[in-house]
Image 1 (tube, rainbow, N blue to C red):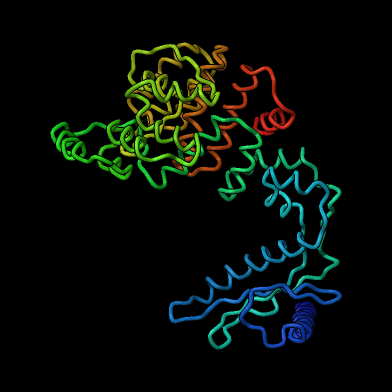
Image 2 (image 1 turned 180 degrees about the vertical axis):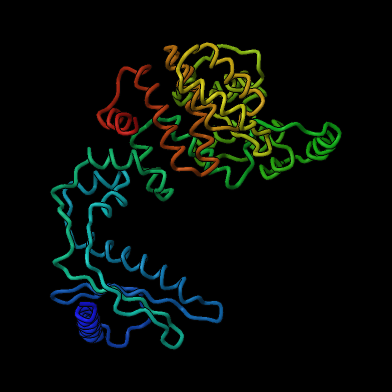
Length: 403
């Protein structure tokens, strides 16, 4: 019996290899000597997706093979999408349709027929039977796109995400992403760890001698209003969101940031003052907090104690007090803010909970954590839907899709 199975396996392998070789022979007729281009060829029955890399001494076969396979699928999908006329494509593209369309394009039974080095090139080629490609253009709808994008825009390219969020027009979410993107260039931290007063003062004295300070100086003295105010005197950010993102880094110092939020109609919500400094900052910055990563972290025993009480759902006021004490010591903690917003919603304090959900989103972005971001959006949506009466169909769909 074992011999029988072994014989079948050998016959299968020989037939599969023969089939792959026949596809490769057919492909070479189309490719001719074009080994340089990353391109899609096609016959009557097959697509052949070729990826070509330059080979040098530092090249790694396994790495190029893996990257080439992923890229071959990507360029094939791009090729097929160009061949198909999609209804209302102009409208869909304004919402960031790229990933949604590719997700609806299903490819099965692709076969790698070439994966090798040839002279100064490394080639990866997939063959895909045309009959194994499923793409129904009539199934592409805006409402489905919005639901998909609501759950997946974290993974979008910057340009595609910008399209989607701009159309959606939840301006606080747009600003949070703007802060995140600008943070890649400048230190926009507005919640700082303790500093050495003498060293900090020396840095300040040095910086105030700069007549036209650059925002890069925030790396030395985060949140220093002199840098921000003088930078904005001589430099005009490309849009209002970048302008606000820069102002957010000094939101605790004055009311300029809060006032500017109203100028572009971002919800400027009040928060009941608490005796802890972090909640004063929370109100002044309206939830747009950016934390220094060196802030003290909460002890595991303490967070386990809070988690246990939270899961029991008893003594809500006691849980809130525990959370506020913990956040006053360790504000850079997603789980604590997530619990806090849930408790505020349970007390019907939806405006305060919305502010806290902005902190959740900010931390999730700072940690580049998709799972946290999805949870933060859930917190945001549960509060937003309670405090705002009128939504567009797409806004309502976004909120429902993220809860």
